[in-house]
Image 1 (cartoon, helix red, strand yellow):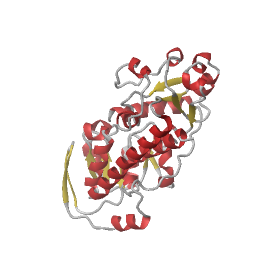
Image 2 (cartoon, rainbow, N blue to C red):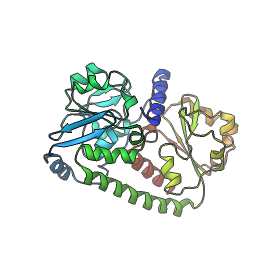
Image 3 (spheres, rainbow, N blue to C red):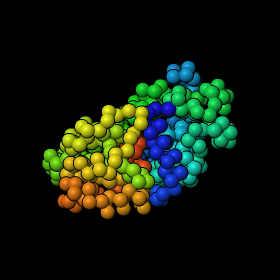
Image 4 (cartoon, helix red, strand yellow):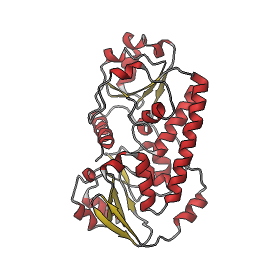
Amino acid sequence: MSKKVTLYITGLLLLVLLATGCSSDGEDTSSANGESDEATSEENSEETSERKLTHAMGEITLKEKPERILAPYLEDSLVALGEKPVAQWSIGETVLNYLQPQLEGVPKIGWDLPIEQAIEQNPDLIIFSAPTALQNGSYEDYSSIAKTYVFDEETGADWRKQLTTMGEILNKQDKAEQVLSDFNQKVEEASATIKENIGDESVAFVWTMGEQFYVFDENRYGADIFYNEMGIAKPEFLQSLPEEGEQWNPVALEKLGELDADHVFLIGNEGEPGFEILENSSVWQNTPAAQNGQVYEVNDPSHWTIDGVIAHEMSIDQMVDTLSK
């Protein structure tokens, strides 16, 4: 399992154990490139010629277009390409909230893809995000159920490569290319709009879960796009964070009081204790963003704490809307 998937799953497991807050539904989004349902339907109806695909665990041959796809935690790429999985990733009742408008009615399957649950879904293609994602059985176990494709670690950890490879698997290379082209255009337009509204003022992103706080460094999830592609100014505070690693460590409240960002997106499920802690903290209330009324509470963290084209589009749209007011 890739590093970012591991971090997200760890966070969600903590969230389930804490049983704090309740997730709000993600906002509705259209397909990533704005094509009509009719166009998507026509594309999906096209037959696929026999293809041999090499992957991290070997080689598979697909003789026709897969109809029943199992791809836990890869649903963003599937949906962006106009596909609906036969079952969706979950931890207990927790799912990827932001994709629920597109995945309404799709049954849940355990994040570690239990063999019995996989058999029940009768898939004709199973896709894993990395070799380490095979948590509940061997490659041979899953291959005995259906054709099984496993991303290598590098591809699974890079959402653009992941989307491109998914396009190759599903014979939708042109669609994947168009989705990425549309996304790049959105990044360019959003960057111009945000700079027009806030200039060189800095922005920080803080995720609260339970009573803890996590600050997005410049390579964490969408922050990589915001800072490194859109050119949004980073607060100097980020330089004091430990180097990004497997473990995403929380930041102590006293340390968080040093956050020098002009704007802060405070992300967390409604009712998280962290919101009340900051509201009552003189340390936090003395930060520049809090003093200037430029802390923005975001109550759906699901698309902020994952890498995927739809997730990043939603976060960008939310940023543009918030910073344009």
